[in-house]
Amino acid sequence: MSKLRIAPATEADLPLILDLILALAEYEKLAHVVTATPGRLRETLFGDQPAAEVVLAHWDRECAGFAVFFATYSTFLAQPGLYLEDLYVKPHLRGKGIGLGLLKHLARIATERGCGRLEWGVLDWNQPAIEFYKKLGAVAMDE
View 1 (cartoon, rainbow, N blue to C red):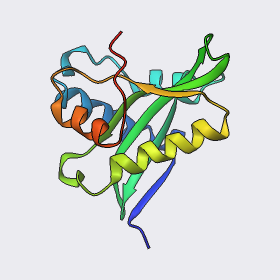
View 2 (view 1 turned 180 degrees about the vertical axis):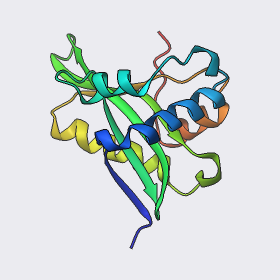
View 3 (view 1 turned 60 degrees about the vertical axis):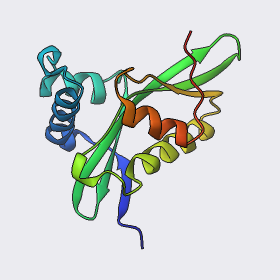
């Protein structure tokens, strides 16, 4: 049985979500721009009109990482899409397939929703992430 479990986040997971956001921001050297609060996250993720969705990855009993994504639309394809805003796996749990598991989970969601694309961005200095995505066969859309 796999040690990896991925499931949609719930309102009860807000402290975990905020901790993961802060850890990601620290890793990306952007902690100084984080203004997210539990209240704003509650409203924008679990309120009447959620702006995004979150899935949490657990390795054994530990929260290992998360993915934050939202719906988009392509006029060229005339199809909905998904945009992956953030994907983060805790450093000590990297290399176990957790990031790949999160991406596969999002690909399933995109397929179920009839999406034509699953897109994301990556910081140009983040070579480990760039290599991870290249290894999966991702194609850069530089423009």
